[in-house]
Amino acid sequence: MASVKRLYYQNAVYHVCIRGNNKQYILQEEEDKVIFLKSLEKFRTRFGFKLYGFVVMDNHVHLVIQTNSLVSISKIMHAITLSYSVKFRR
Image 1 (spheres, rainbow, N blue to C red):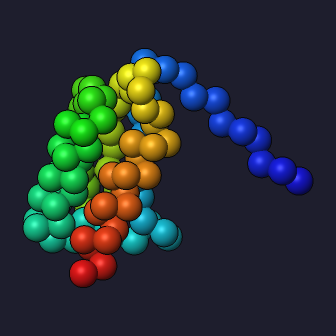
Image 2 (image 1 turned 90 degrees about the vertical axis):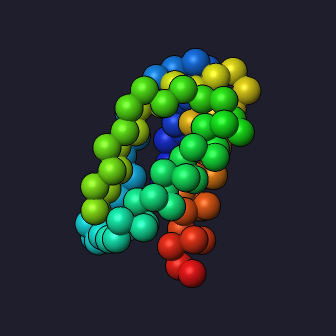
């Protein structure tokens, strides 16, 4: 059975939760949180989305993001999570 295609809207506000597999810690050390926040700021500047709020915990992150007409929420989240995961694995 094919998966249902997600609907995305321009200029929409999204609540996004990022978490590790099996609720594993993804932001274990204070340094990990700083690296994540730097990645978040880098892509906020690059893509021009609005960040209304965030909560960073050891095993998950909550973001409230408003997209713009140029970039989708999937592209934003892909860039942020890929950037952080590459740095985390090092």
